[in-house]
Length: 414
Image (tube, rainbow, N blue to C red; front, side, top):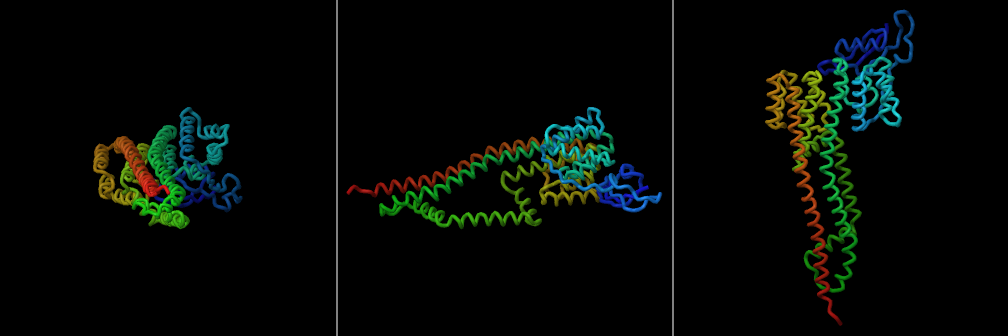
């Protein structure tokens, strides 16, 4: 018998550690699975076995964690391929060998190779995912663990692939809604800077020869141009200092929490971010609960996956309320972040005993609302940015033309 030390996640989401005796690493994993423990690490203790010999080195030694990074699209592709291979009847190790034999060189091939090595040594797929790549978060790994325990891993991976595709489409919608207005704004600022630093100084000679007072708007333009021409380095340095200070601020936990809370209050943009959170929360919770993960554990997993620190702090309060025996709808109502309709639909699911389906309906509803908000944001922001930039450029052009007209009017033939 060999002695293994483990760190694991219990069924209620807590962290536990201990030791287990087993003939091999694979048997140790099976014992932990029977106790409903999801291992995070499993290390064989150095020492003497009962027959007086040291345990052999090799596959029983702890395997070093590998930091293989995958992009969001690569995770989706990996999940889809794995679900298709398992659904076709292949076992886990042969399916990973097929993925390892991909012709092109990619991170997916590397990950498949590392996962296959872990599985051959007796590791479960969920634990192997944790060891091989940090790109598979706790949410993904715990879903895979639930599929392994229930024997429905192919179906779960198919559902997870659909969920990841939906979340990726959601992210692309939000990003694409901000790209065009940002480009217009940057180009407009660049054009104004060009006017101030190059065009207006070229016209100063004409203005000075007339000896006449310039119109008020032209005076303001000339003074602003002088400021840009002589102190452009200070302006750029000031902007760089502000950006650097802001980036340093949001690297701290209080600063990042303030920024995340402020983002939700920005007109138009804040409503899109909140709508994205509502859709992501409901679809993720529906996916977790439908795959047999208890409500409290699902909430903990969902909370740990929230990137917004302000929202994560609110959801931690909901987790505490549910742990103390409260309902999910009551907890969401107390934090005051979720709309009444959202809470009412969840309450209906709790009363009917089909919370997963209610959350799925909520997710579809708020996904549609998010599409409407994104379309509204795109339709409003683009003309607003264009009008503001056109107004600023037009004002500069008017000041230049007005100054030229006044200067030409002051020139008399000798």
